[in-house]
Length: 334
Image 1 (tube, rainbow, N blue to C red):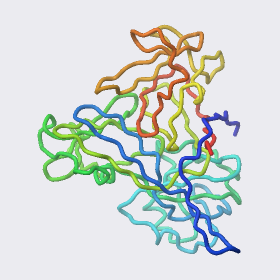
Image 2 (cartoon, rainbow, N blue to C red):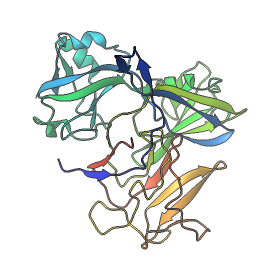
Image 3 (cartoon, rainbow, N blue to C red):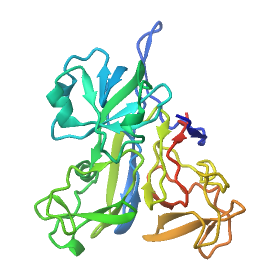
């Protein structure tokens, strides 16, 4: 698969090296934390850190949607049926791609393979296109972050109330629309018009959320591993909340937000026709439009912001593009 690579700003934010003695040393994963104040009103949130790998090993072969894992005899026994997981590829031509796990199918198979969920919208490419590209490549399996997890990251749990106006809400972009989930008095998370409990709703890697906070401000603290891998980020023409894959602040220019005539390039234009980025600033959404000359102008401001770090490592940005790019990959910045 041909992938368009993005160069991002070079940075090493965190390093963890464990010393053994004068003759030996052991390297650990890069681990860290970040904190963010969640103020009353609308907040933009990104979660760049990862949960610990459940497994990192070699994928020896693929049959249908089943990926055989080296050294495993009953991989399904390692899974919790109430949790959600994904596979991330660490080598080969699919490096950076991710696929959701069919947890029920993997547990039922009770063999040395992990079954991929071919129907998941979180997959960065169709499972039918994998072919032999995963053979003898390194993959990691880890648990997804969920709405319930996000609640535990807050210094005070989200405000729960059966009234939408009196409860905290978390918003996602779904099929180009902004959908909010509110915390009810019984502690569950509900969507308007749907009585199901969405506490296990996944916040996929690279996807951001809005937190609509009532009452007093709280602090969000996320602890986890730093991604040490390239990151596949397919972009659609739908309105999307994207979040950083790494704990690195980045500029639009560094992320390739430049106009071009190619089929997958960004589009420069007027306020109504140009691709744009919307940021939460002081509780309001502020639009930055890409111009044909490559400048990125804020509404009501003629200054050029393309070299300003608009993509904060702790926040998500709402973007709208005229052209899709299914093969986009961000190269790790360290």
